[in-house]
Image (tube, rainbow, N blue to C red; front, side, top):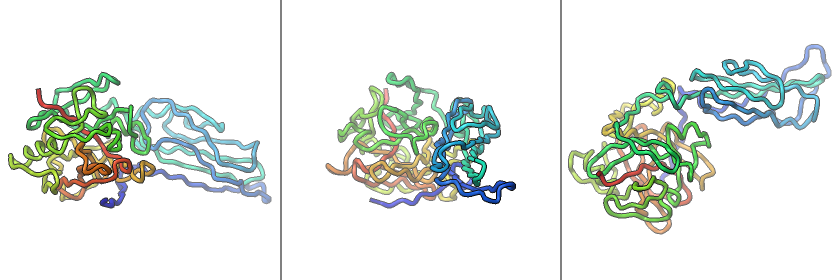
Length: 338
């Protein structure tokens, strides 16, 4: 298994920042420290104009009498008091700060702060650069629309699959799945069925009439990208990755890390995005904004599934393989062109 390094996108404010600070009451020289770590659960990515419930926890002593004050400039309420509060996220996309302070007479106060990114799935201002072919199908299972392009002998989705019947959103951030799709194990993606032949892969998690691409499906795509010259699946696919990579932005910030080695030509509206992966039997998320990974339904062997990947600093589109249940990757659905 190739080991990948995780990189953060430097100019996107997506990093969880949990900071605790203590402040002494000027009038109380006998103040003592609260015990425990003040914390709260809040997604790093939020959908614009939606309700958000926040619950402060973690202080183990004192056990009562604590005052909790929330500061959330730009939300429906800039300031609220209470251990549990409900607010509406900003209507305007961008980066914001959510902060809570626990205080009580006789104790140093504690503060926990987190930076969040507000996105609007219904606005092109939140995801710029994505191209749509004009042709789409509606998944009868959940009503989601998927645009597709005819490339060679197959129709390919213009985006990663976002079927919530399986898989996970990256870091369980559901709004990200709207843009990036979900991550699936090979077994989830294919229904444990290894596929072969052109357009003959298993349906797996794809909508009815569509399938998870086989090695032959991937080779059909590569031949088109390689000026009608056939390329075997188990090869590096030199220079073909940048032909599918899209130059896209979230809230006007580049999604792919910059590199002069990947020109991001986005041929055929394939819209390759760095949607990351799940690792360690789905207990750890990595590689968003640096790598995109896509399954092949053709297994390597009884224990391993194969996938292709694009790295931000390379024009290529290599393949690799991994234990079927260890790794989570994206799915592109295909069908024989009608």
